[in-house]
Length: 470
Image (cartoon, rainbow, N blue to C red; front, side):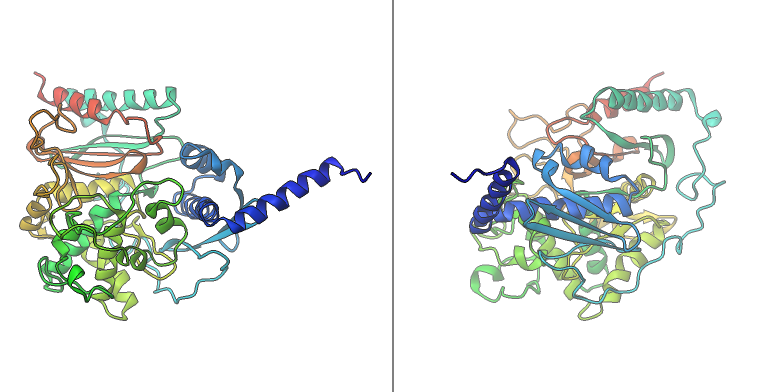
């Protein structure tokens, strides 16, 4: 009788597993998702933020799913790309381009299939003087000039980081407090400093809002006119406008769950063109009548923005830098693209905590900055109007709100802070919160596990209490 060695049995099991995987489309997509998601996020986390492969795996990926433990990773420091594979059958590559970030290639591809626009070199826009305080420079907070109240707030922020060290699920990377336009408290995790670009996740959706606002200001786009979307020439789609898309009331089908086979996971980790994937979804509700949070909706908007520049890919890249980042003195920002050349407006922008704070402060100032109108105040106010179809009153136009719900039995999301708070929000606890009535901006970035609270609500309440104390 023929006897198999232990190694032979293991090899046979692997071969059988591979044959099964290749024949099962759901599992096939799941493994492409695992390798694609890990390749993209390790590439960006390493080459953009400067974290190690181990940090990203242990802090950002494995807490999402234990499947990432099975993914093999190879980082090429010289050529600046990341390769991943799983079960010897599924491999992906993400490539880093200076000033543009990481681009995830489609399954099986090893080279970009389109010509990248020229990079935007950091440091072009603003002289980041080490002697000047935020927002004009990179000087550390002058603690000897802080009032007793501001010092107590600094202690509140430090206490949050002590909690982060004690609880492995919190993993705060940066936490800033700005009051009346002055940076009064900031703290960073080990390996992070005021210039480290950090991931937005869905805070990028609010940046997409600002891009639209700039184009509306210039007369290039309109909220209520028909939109330029390929394939939307039939009756069902013709009623969808930019206002519907910004308020998440387009009526398009989209599965925002992040499990195996979900649209969001497929869009970010498998398909080459995020705009095409989302815009080809069917209409299942009349426009304006049903609210559903959809990352695909944002990437449709990103495609509309791109087409407003025609074939001018350089103009598409330059636009946000020249009209938003340059006036604010932001030079850490990276807007990442898919392999078709679209900005992934739903999820992938990197910027330092201090630069995120500049965006927050500009919003707090109703679109003005240093005497210049970046966006009309009317656009900021529009962004804060609750979407009519959202019964919780929690969503405006790609910004989250802290309004009282229409249902009196429901509580506000953050009942301990003022109702006028509005904020950018992203996966794993990314937040930029503006509270106009208190002249406060909070920035919190990190790798918090999905089911764990960032404790930001408690921190904001404590900061407000400290500011109002005698």
